[in-house]
Amino acid sequence: MLSYQHLYHAGNLADVQKHALLAWTLDYLTRKDKPVTYVETHAGRGLYDLTAPEAVKTGEAAKGIAIAQDWFPTNHPYRRALAATRAERGPNAYPGSPLIAGHLLREIDSLHLCELHPQEHAALDYAAAPFGAKVYREDGLAKALSICPPTPRRGMVLIDPSYEVKTDYETIPRVLGQLHRKWNVGLIYLWYPILRDGLHKPMLAEIMALAPEALVHEVRFPPVREGHRMEGSGMVMLNPPFGIEEETKRLSALFRKLR
Image 1 (cartoon, rainbow, N blue to C red):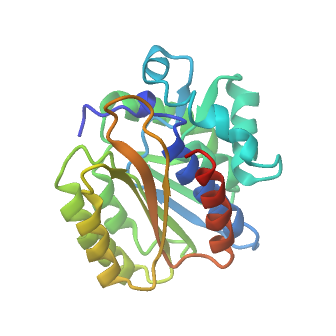
Image 2: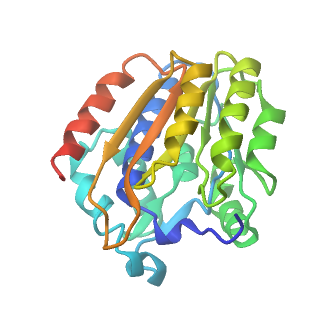
């Protein structure tokens, strides 16, 4: 949906879960001296100012990364990407997943970032330029299908829609199945919100029927404000890397302390 702007939600607890797992995975992939391809289907603007009126209005960052950043030691890849972003852009900057990828990947790696919203795309193009990313103003799911299997063949796709378009819940399982068949060695990650009405449940059931070996990690957290529908977030990981289950357990224990 072209009206969605992530600035209102940047740095919230759902971002913490998503970005911690993404950073851990990219760190894992770059331990080998082999190139990596990173594809993101709904990239947003890539860089956020947590003192912007939109971020302050919702208060989600104040109850998210402001609290959770101390969960991560300074050598954790998520904390490293956060520190690198703030060193370059100021103490109130927050990296979206494109900048987390940009800071953790190397010159030998490839970044493909998709964003349809015209203003968000322009901001992303500027923010991602230092990392040599290819930035597309195209439908991200269609672009991922056209890129995959990519060269280099090692790597991952992050699918992170806004879910403001209800058909996303119906479309995504089909696309995940196609991607998994086309790129059977690729790591395919899907983030989703956990809402009070449980809209994610049929989608998740369909994905697990297609890929029963996938790893699912869900966290719960208190609603940020009265009437807020999101009560948690989840990540489905196809071809999860060795060792990530320990990271998911560590994150789960940290999120449990919030309730």
